[in-house]
Length: 370
View 1 (cartoon, rainbow, N blue to C red):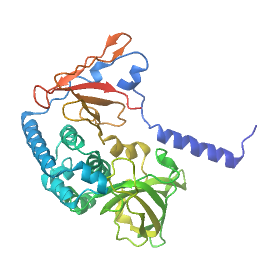
View 2 (cartoon, helix red, strand yellow):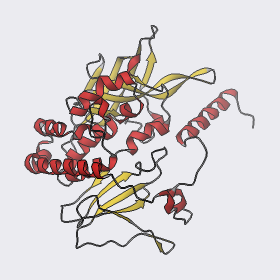
View 3 (tube, rainbow, N blue to C red):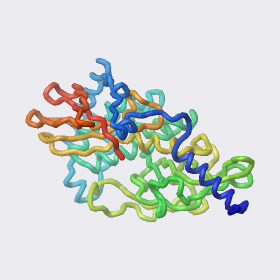
């Protein structure tokens, strides 16, 4: 059957989109992929990265400060009952440097590692899941795209206030008809005739920090030159809530759990965004879009005398994209033991890392998050 010109063009567009979603470049055997073939490529995991003495001391000091702050100021019952994280708690986290701890020092952050951030998140997550998600939404995804891909001018304009907690950040991707399918977002951006602003129209939902953020990374489709014609491609826009046409239609959606987080619904109606607020490149590859999401540690916690888990992407030793596996760092009390996972009856040797006290080592197992 002969395909029409329109059908052929549509198929070519679908192929390009699939290639974009599946990334480009030479195929390599990752650790996670090898597991499906019954292989354990331990050389891709070990040796486990140990922090330097100076980094460990700085991390220990910050963790102790976070622990003391949480013990004194963080009331998870009140936060759940009121569905609000108190302003003094947010301000206190900012003063500790927690809201900018992985932001480079030249932009007002502490320039600490993802490992240090995970340790701090253990302290918060063990007490209040809502507060841990709030910090994650601000630091791991809200401002991460700005840190990784923003221009020098954009970083110096926004990051210092975001790092101090004077402003909060949000990442606006999810829509009524698209979420995990990032390429399916329907929010549109059109360049005005003068070439000075993009006009955004659309809506976002389930946006953590959406109604309280001072800077939002909003994903929309904008026309981008491709093969001699303009095609709509996912683009990142740095948006502030004072822009005309920015509307909060639901400031804080009610939830069954992690009630302290502000989960919002937003609408954009002919919202003009200056061209200098576009986070380069104009077209956002799906791989680049996923980097901020992959940097977000997932905190699964229990009381301090039980097992607590932090799932974190293995970006300390494999910083290049795609990140194809995570580590489960399990904090084990003395009375608990764990049988290592096995592949083809061969145990995977865990990496035991003394990031906490000697009596509470972190036992790290490689896992596949998908």
